[in-house]
Image 1 (cartoon, rainbow, N blue to C red):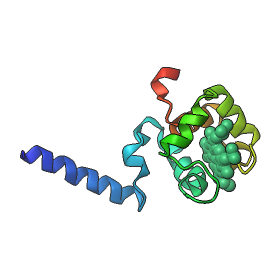
Image 2 (tube, rainbow, N blue to C red):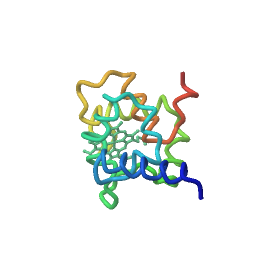
Image 3 (cartoon, rainbow, N blue to C red):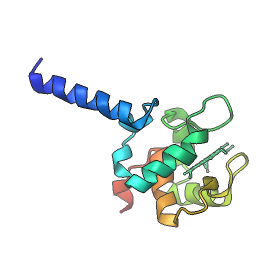
Image 4 (cartoon, rainbow, N blue to C red):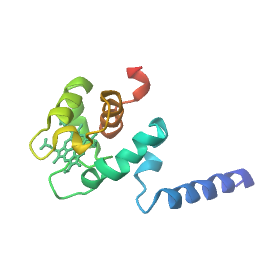
Length: 117
Ligand code: HEC
């Protein structure tokens, strides 16, 4: 076990403490979102999308998102913009741009953003 290894883990721990109590950002590549997008995600989308048991596809739920990814990013985005059953139009982010929503949808659905750009 090298010293560098320890430093890495300490840093990861501090980062987790920094973003709050939930650990989703650490594993799911939040760094690919802009700071504003990450904030929107945490304040708005995460309000529903991190809660199991209320009929919401939870972030990181591979089985759930695998089934939805089949639709393709464009359709997922269209559904997020227009609303779908319990999903409110724009995910209630009325100030989000289409590009921001596209990033958020890709992030949530586990679609690598680099492929889209
Ligand atoms: C009020 C709760 C709520 C909020 C806030 C919310 N969602 Fe959702 N979302 C849902 C629910 C419920 C579904 C599942 C709809 C269904 O039954 O297919 C969903 C589904 C989705 C889907 C899948 C659509 C599909 O075609 O399968 C995407 C993508 C999505 N949300 C993105 C977002 C994004 C991005 C945000 C933040 C900007 C957000 N949601 C905010 C409740 C919410």
